[in-house]
Image 1 (cartoon, rainbow over the protein chains, first blue to last red):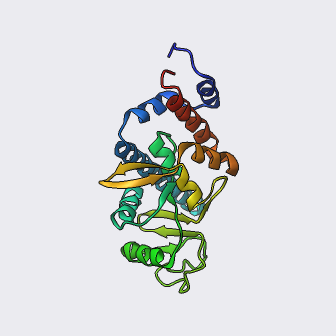
Image 2 (cartoon, helix red, strand yellow):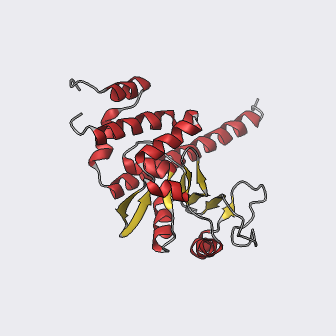
Length: 68
Length: 163
């Protein structure tokens, strides 16, 4: 975006905030914001579950003695 | 067990519980892009409110999250007149019931600058944006730093719509 940023916008951007995401959220209705958040939370929980399953699998495979 | 914070919020609204929405869900409603794992509400924790909460949360197995034994909220505590904060885990997600909000004060203080929004066919009271920012500044937690900056941008946009 070429337009000049305000001081707080510049600070947020420098911190790593994606302002296009903020702009998108602000274009949504309140219930749409909550729905999108729940979708994102579900994804985080699924990824976490997949990560835990992968770690368990890894643990099991390192504990199994190698075949000759 | 399926986490659904929106259903948890709807449940509280459907049962006419007198609360103010604070914390992460309030930040999301203001437009922040953070992810939160619980619903935080500020309320006066009166015995009649606790009874209503127990009735509406009963199908979702509420337990005291911070007790190792995960005591059921439906049974404990029996004496509810002295309660200030309650931290629950339910089948729908976490629910933090707070009698006081850092940097702002009790329910009456938060009420002063709150706004009312229409949500799921109900009127929902939401902590004021400046108070929400004040809370996050007071708590000064690393996990809030990004949200704090985003909320400041949103406040700036509200005050200076041309930005």
